[in-house]
Image 1 (tube, rainbow, N blue to C red):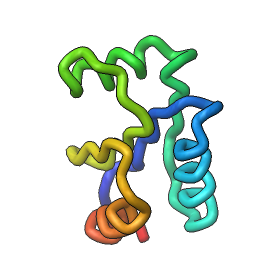
Image 2: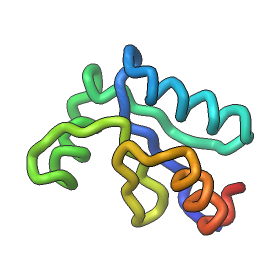
Image 3: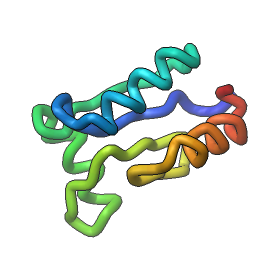
Length: 83
């Protein structure tokens, strides 16, 4: 089985909320980090994106999706056998 997805975002961000709601609605176990309140998570994103803090970002196994469309997210979750 694949790794549990990690969602990096911000509590005020509507797209982050949309991804959280989608994952919960689809019963996908995931971890959420608010990059504005978790410096370690923010640094992990910066390390992956040349020092830039991007969000929302989903890390699914070794795949990183920066601000994906819902179709792209659904396809990756299916490919990882999480949907």
